[in-house]
Image 1 (spheres, rainbow, N blue to C red):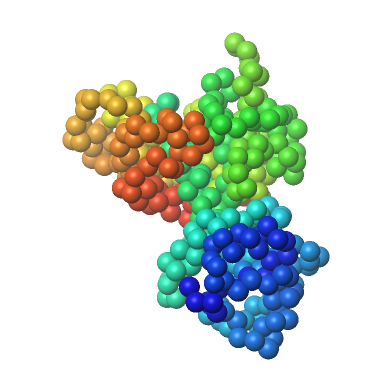
Image 2 (cartoon, helix red, strand yellow; image 1 turned 60 degrees about the vertical axis):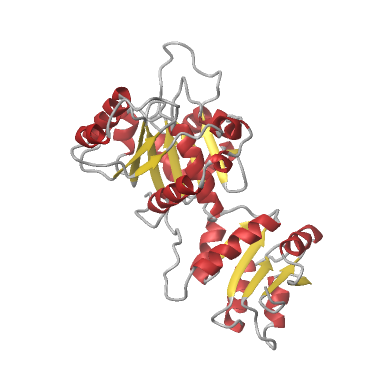
Length: 363
């Protein structure tokens, strides 16, 4: 990358070091979006410009001024300490390519620059300006693994993700993320305060939140009270681009049907797996569904492709994931995406594009 192709205005030393780690040839200034706006009133803006929002009381106003003085072909990236989806969407609507919460890393910047290079001038860049609720369905079948992978890959694209584990007694999504659910879903449903929902999220990463029932909460026969679930989902939709919900019962599906944008059915290539998936398809008839064939275990091939197609009304799976023997180890380390190969990543990228793309707003 030539020296005039990437310029950064960073307020703190740690962020400047991250930019230097990414590229020794980058032009790095100490300052904020306000300093960048002043500089490019008289200078030609670079191909890619990264600006810091920290230290400014009204960063959106300074960003609007910056966009006025930069060349139309300049790709503007923003960073700051505020981890807020509303701010990110306001920036996207204004013309910013991507907002990255701090702390930055050289790897973050390298990934973002690959996105910049992949976005052609004549293409409409896929942005999310509305929240989507996706129900991840399947009893066992590796559904938590698929949910974790979708969440992490969506976060790689700059999306804010909230994951919900609706299973009161046996939910294990928190284990898949190696994250404690904190006060969690029980408290959120009791409070009924959508505005306070973000306080109850366990933070998996800067862009991924988790809300689930505490592991030791429910005893045998304890009754569920999910009367506030729809209102909670509406509240969480203000904090995320995509909500991924696991462990949903038929009752959950019915109560959230009017808010759900897609249903992802994960199943194994076994008679039991086909039976459960086919049942979900009958329940969800007429709604948007994505079928994921997941080889979650090293099982022998006990059902054929024709049997699978026949079970689903002459329909093939939308995504097929082979068994990955390193998955359990990488899940334990909190990095399941490291276990998948190129073929699986390509399949999951298509799934993420389908599930995290533009769509109906949760209202």
